[in-house]
Image (tube, rainbow, N blue to C red):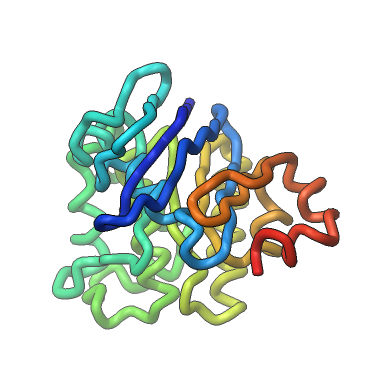
Length: 231
């Protein structure tokens, strides 16, 4: 699935990620954890083609994607749900979903049914302008828009940011459903507890470097992990 080897990437003029190597296997739910400034978002942006790495390699299903523009990365089967959602505010929910149809390999109507089954609230608001949705509904729409591309790997950057706990639970329940359906997921998230309770494997970054990785249950059981790496 996804293989990142020796990734080095910059944020502006600052080297934010140093020789990072991670793997996401087919059907796996993998998380990247770390405090603010750890290099998590820079890593995802490099993987998605939004930042050009200054070193290392990134491949998806054995094919190099680190030199491809973002739209080609999407066509190869990787979709990023960015931090901040970035829905197109003047367009309706359905129009936002239709924007992603060019990259999907199935029928648009079937893809939209899948999104509406996952997030019934979006179906109720399909004709409402995206800018009038609540923050939680916009996050659902951002995930739905990524799913319209039929990604082999769904990549999410801080999906819980700014959301009420009840909405965070709803969003993570949707990720549970996708994972159970065989969707490969790579997640960056600051809510360590809710993430480790769900993912299969996690990588922890500190100042752009990998400091620990392992089975999620084992990391969750480590009483020293938060103070050592996430504070």
